[in-house]
Structure formats: C-alpha cells, structure tokens
Length: 143
Image (cartoon, rainbow, N blue to C red; front, top):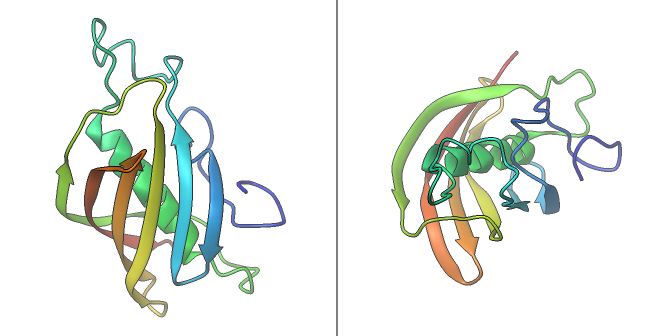
C-alpha cells in the first residue's frame, strides 16, 4: 500500500509516483511491487510518438522508489521518507516495456547502514516471466 497507515509510504506523488502497489515488504530486507504501464503515462507522448516505450530511466526510478520503501522503518515515527540516488551500478535493460505491460519489481537489500542512511539494493524488474531490467542501486535517506 502506498500513502496509507497500514504500510510504507513515499513522498512521491503523481505524475512521478511510479509504484502502483506494494505486494510484500519487510523493513530493511526487501520489497515487491508493481507499476501498470498505460498509454496515459506522462512520458509516452515524447518517448516515442510512433512507438510508445517506457524510458529505461523510468524503470530505474520505479525500482529506486521501491528500494526507498524497503528502507522505511515503521517504528521510526520521526523518519522522513525522503531519499535520493547515491549511485546506479551495472544496470542492464533487456527488453522494451510498453503500454499494457505490468512492470513487476523486486528489490533486495544487500547492505544498509542505518546510521548514515545509505542502502544498497539488488533490483530486478520483470514483465511476465521475462527479466527486463536489473542492477544495483545505492539510495541515501535524507536526515
């Protein structure tokens, strides 16, 4: 769930919220969620007008948002749920993502230094059973 009291919440909002739903989540461990890709997404008019393809940077942003959810500690009431990229390593895009696809995502926390708010996640995105994107993301929690 996004934005509710029953689960993790991000500061991102439309049109830049790229996680539609969180299916599974364990703080500091992993998160699983998805983004339904529709022709109404705001990037399609320019990417590309004659063949709508979700920009690869959008996939990475969606994975990073899910990674931010994995960083959220519900016990820390004063925590801001704001984070930013600290690094993107080894990202590979394997197939296009187009309207009608469901981008299923999973991030697994590899290393998390809570004191400094730095987290590395192994991130993967799928359409059906096809792996379409993978890489390691570094996220930094704002203090």
